[in-house]
Amino acid sequence: MKKVSLAELLKGMRAASYEEQYSSIMKLLEDGRIKPLKRSGTNGKKPALHLAYWLAEEETDYAPYREELLYCTMPRFSVDYYLRHLDVYEKERTAVRALQDFLQLHGEKLRQQVSFNERSFQIWGKEKFLLQGAGKTVLKHCGFDAALLNCYETAEPFSCYAHERRTPQKILVIENKDTFFSMRCHLLGGASAILGETFGTLVYGAGKRVLSSFRDFSVSAEPYMKERANELLYFGDLDYEGVGIYENLAASLAPQWEIKPFAAAYRAMLAKGAGVALPRTKEKQNRHITGAFFACFPAADVLAMRKILEAGRYIPQEILNLEDF
Image (cartoon, rainbow, N blue to C red; front, top):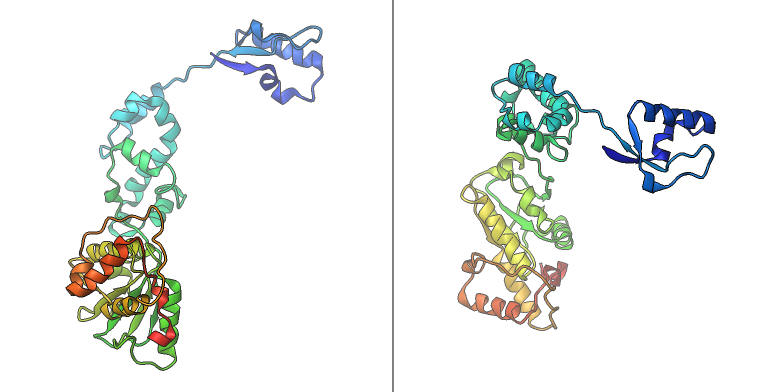
């Protein structure tokens, strides 16, 4: 039984006369479909109707679902959860049967790896069902490992400027957009090096997004960029967050790829920062760093960097501009 209002019961009869509405409610009462909730009061009309009722809900016959699970579901699925929760199966049945149909009729397609959204559309006709809809829940309830769908994650493609594609070359990953743009302008203006280092390619890391962009570097990067003889360098803000981005990126690329800090740029930041009032570190910034960044510098540089950070200050990479490169 659930409580419903008079208005809800008459929802489809708003254009009908009150006599017709009254007759409809009386018929429901006679059939035992509803019982008046007497403490709700009446509508003040003649003849009066109560303002709320108890509605008798029809019990669902789950027997066909039980039969379907036991005798018409492939052994690759575990039906234990659904047998214990037939009401959930009723809601998820369409998605479960769609998955079974795909595996039975098009299972060979799993040999070709595709993106999660592409596989989701293949199976359910909804590209976001697997990652943003109920897809993961359905797979869990079926006891079906998502890895068997043979999907890959897609990251935001990184923006880069290829000054040249000859290999081996140095590739510089830059945290912030302004510095990326300025260094690109520097090379487009005819310069052959940045702070004494020759780079063939500049990559815009976009802060923390660089971690997802480089997750599949070996797959998504252009062929010349994946040349093993290339050297990867990173340049970002000299603050806890910037250091952390480098350390996380280096860890995610290892052991296939090694990336080092662009030491000359950090030293240029230190030199230029010595003569200005440095900004304060943003509040609630994650200060957890491993020390892998500092391990790439001599002791004197590390001392200068730590002194700045521990004083609650930082140096943005925008301290450098075209005239410094």
